[in-house]
Length: 112
Length: 116
Image 1 (spheres, rainbow over the protein chains, first blue to last red):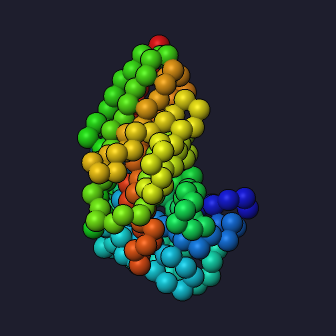
Image 2: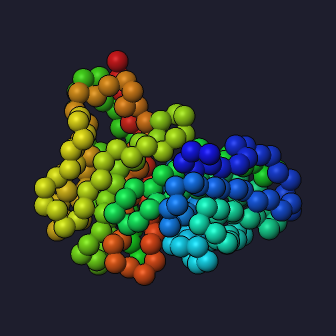
């Protein structure tokens, strides 16, 4: 692994199903983020983690949960998917506040 | 809460010309970082340029430069000698230095078209 990796790359999911989007980084970054990107709405922050063991809510947290058991992994879970959660999801990480965020390649999720 | 506003959903520029993308933000903090990211059709997010709020000098990176007006809370991106490869979605982002919560807030983006 080099950098930050998301899985899966794309997914079609039936409404009501549970889904976990995976995010792993090998840069020992402290901060990690989950965003969703929708046309005309830009990148909206779902949840974030400033360090392992802590998480916080972003702008659009409803219907999503996260955990940060260790530095490298930051999974995003949709407990019961709904069509409005159809989006492209980006995971990002950053070493500290003075540095930029590095992004994964994104996960295109379609809830039908 | 901090907000970032990009008022131009789309812009077009002739190849080799100069274009400026606008970004304004709202914050009560005095120390922060501002970023411009580029997202080409590949969906990859690429850092274009970064500005530290306590630095008066505007950041530059080759053909990319910013006009940072702290009092006006404005952070525009100027692209000189536009190239076809500059066609992308551009996002402005804000990051606090001192707040308890380390969030990175993005604007809605500006889609830039380069006309040959």
